[in-house]
Image 1 (cartoon, rainbow, N blue to C red):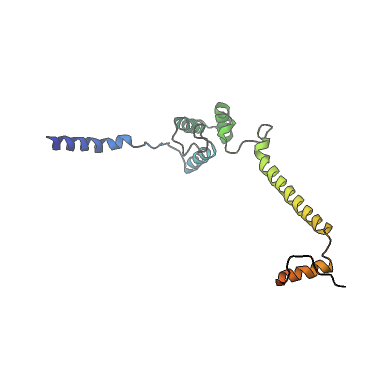
Image 2 (spheres, rainbow, N blue to C red):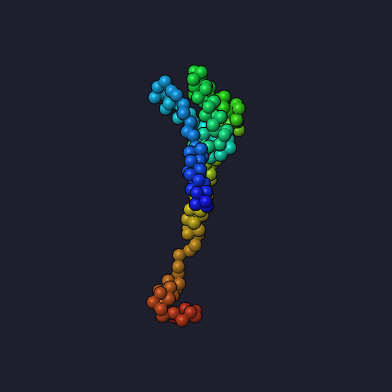
Amino acid sequence: MVRKLRLLLLVLLVGAVPAWADVADVYDFDSRAQEVRFQNLLAELRCPKCQNQNIADSHAPISQDMRDEVYRMMKAGASDEEIVDALVARFGEFVRYKPKLDSRTFLLWFTPAIAVFGGLLVVAGVVIRSRHRDRSEPPLSPEERARAERILAGADSGGPAPRED
């Protein structure tokens, strides 16, 4: 009896696996060019929920809605720009991976260039300061040079250099 119950439970679990499978989105296109255009649009739009995934890769329900909207608008004859503008109007500028340059996105576009320029200024300042410091220090006197040579040879006791008279 227990054995039959286990077998029945196993059959039910194995039979339920297809119900858990994720159903792939199937969109019908008239040409391969339309399908490529659709995939390009999906790749350039960001999922508002996932935030760092495009709507082609996201499994969020909002991404499914966005994919359906892109498909519906394509079938209605909308251009790529019209489709993107409609989704931006609905979800905000964040859905673009490459936002347009305007007053709100100025820092987004130019912060990397500003950071690199600032880094170059810091490096240039360090180099100039080190060159200036090298010029301002006088060269070794003959006595200091002789002591340095003795230190390097291991003959210096660490006291003051003997005077040569």
